[in-house]
Length: 208
Figure 1: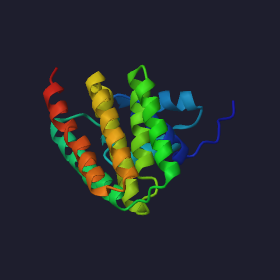
Figure 2 (figure 1 turned 90 degrees about the vertical axis):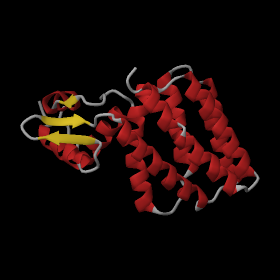
Figure 3 (figure 1 turned 45 degrees about the vertical axis):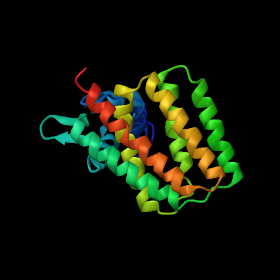
Figure 4 (figure 1 turned 60 degrees about the vertical axis):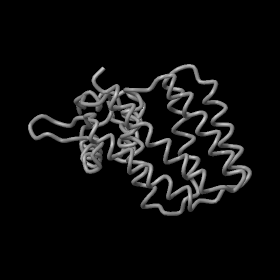
């Protein structure tokens, strides 16, 4: 049977999505033969994609053992969340917000309210933050933010609960309200708060 022609960039996006959605769990080994069978490709583009991902820290390569999804740790969480707070706040300060984008942010948050399971909630939360900085013109910084977002998703899927949903929805509503009033300073302040509250929550629940 002929193999599908799928290149490493496509494989990389598929693997990233599986990591981000929690299909590939933290610390789990990524079997090249299993992935190759599911995608109906050779192991070559898979190995190339995983090698690229290992350069970002999302995937770890251990000689003679293979590729593994990054492990979770409270020390890494603090660094990742702190950095995301800095970068996303900088992006918010330097992005333009028109009426259409504000309406789209509100629609995403309305759907977030209606979400009934963790996967849907986290998807809308991710969509909100992506929409929030979509007009930020620093592509290099946006690339770093995208990598951090994948790493943060692993913590989100491990520790997400209803309390976080309520807090996130309220923070989103406040951000939208501040942006509508052109109060960027207050929007940045609450966005930083959004990322800072995640760290003690993870630390508190890490060993449970």
